[in-house]
Amino acid sequence: MSKPAPLNSVVARVTERIAERSRDRRAAYLARLESAGGKPRRQRLGCANLAHAFAACGANDKAALRGETQPSIGIVTAYNDMLSAHQPYERYPAMIRESVRAAGGVAQVAGGVPAMCDGVTQGYEGMELSLFSRDVIALATGVALSHATFDGVLCLGICDKIVPGLVIGSLAFGHLPTIFVPAGPMPSGLSNADKAKARQLYAQGKVGREELLEAESQSYHAPGTCTFYGTANTNQMLMEIMGLHLPGASFVNPNTPLRDALTDAAARRVVAMTAPGAGTPIGRIVDERALVNGIVGLLATGGSTNHTLHIPAIAAAAGIELNWEDFSELSAVVPLLARVYPNGSADVNRFHQAGGMPFVIGQLIDAGLLHTDISTIHGDGGLEPYRSMPELDEGGALAWTRAATDQSGDPSVVATTAAPFAAEGGLRVLTGNLGRGVIKTSAVKPEHRLVEAPARVFDSQEAVQTAFRAGELDRDVIVVVRYQGPGANGMPELHKLTPPLGVLQDKGFKVALVTDGRMSGASGKVPAAIHVTPEVKGGGPLGRVRDGDILRLDAEAGTLNALVDAAEWESRGAPPPPSEDASHGCGRELFSLFRNNAGPAESGASVLNLLG
Image (cartoon, helix red, strand yellow):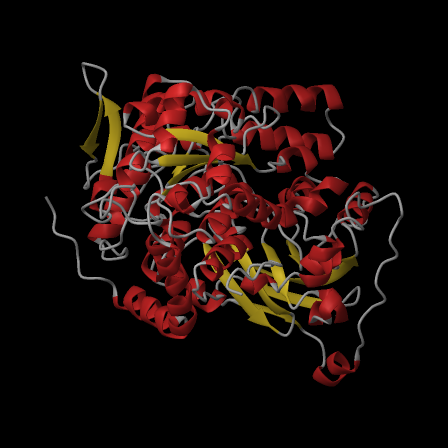
């Protein structure tokens, strides 16, 4: 067994800096947890309150909850059967109730949270509610846990804004032991590369809607998470490397014996965690070390750019202040160890088969790039148990086998730190006179990481697509899409721009996207400077760009600039805001709270201030 290297000096320095800047806020947060402690919680309820809490239970569960020793477990579920990733959760409450009873407790569904599908709303008005839904989910989680009757929590959620929202809401009740229970990815269907090819052919008018729909249907074809490494699967990586999943649980397919065994084990484990001194509550698990581990995992796997928003928001809910400088400094020392679409041709099933998270975690531990002394829901041993892969033994019992640490199961998909796919992580922070933004470099070939070209400015993604169809973008161009920030229209993802811009790049043009909006975790081969802050609606300098200005995006140097005379640049005012079409933006009035109060992208673009 190899001995872990000493903690990397940069990882140590960034962690210490985060802890120091967060000292007072974190102390106030932990003091709140201390005052909220004490078990079982229901002993503090009045008789009428407690009777309401177990009125619908069966006789045995009712008797258990009348007593003072058996733990009560709350289930917060994001189940709906329109999301393929969440459809498997339909049968989880019944499974969990049985497992919790067998472990000596009682489980109840405490509440549900909304779970919209970005895949359905992508490119349409509903997408304007997507980022805000994270804050709604956090609030709904808080409502579910506000009954003050639970001793532990199981959170059922997978997709884009759902897991971050569940984490943020759970941290408001951070004195409770909490486990996140995944459902796994769907089996592999049409390859992601073939799906992307069909999309580009459709964008060029070379295939029709029926051909495109058939390709999409072969790709998204069964219950489970989409198989590319977008935000949903990055969420699963994050929960595992931060110690909120059971080891190796992220990418086991739904409705399999191993998946069910892991769900049973999670239910039994949360019961065990309710015993005094037997488990660590979520508010103490999510500390500066766990958050740095999460960033390292994001960088090492080339995960979703959305997590440059979500991780700071999660941190803030735990009394910790993270910023993009922390991401940038860590990126310089964390190697890229995974090639999963859109960073490569493999999907998450192949990644898991090649060693998956246990192998990646083992490599990072051995290189001194992870804090191993964190608390996890697994219990003793810190992060070391997360080097192990779950399996069923010959008798059908769940067991963990330590993953090989020296050799990848597929070197084209998972690399060692000795021979990584890239020396630095898959995300970069860009800075210049256009503001600060983020770029996902892991999916962009090195020859496309520097683009200097004239700007073409748009106020909507629909306008970009119209110009593309008219042939107006058949040249070197940096497409600027402004008024897409959280305060303008809720910061929708602009993923539908990937196919047309990819077509232009394939024609040999130098192409890039610069926007104060978001791209999907599936953002691909076209360089895209996203989350540019300050956003244009708030007076950000991206609003000074005019058609024809020469812009320079240099992902290697980490710069984002307009090559415009300084005096001319400073003399320019903000553009007039786009007029709002009354038929566009189904939630703009209803969700004006978010648009008017969301913080900047660097802080997580949240309206919540859970620290009071």
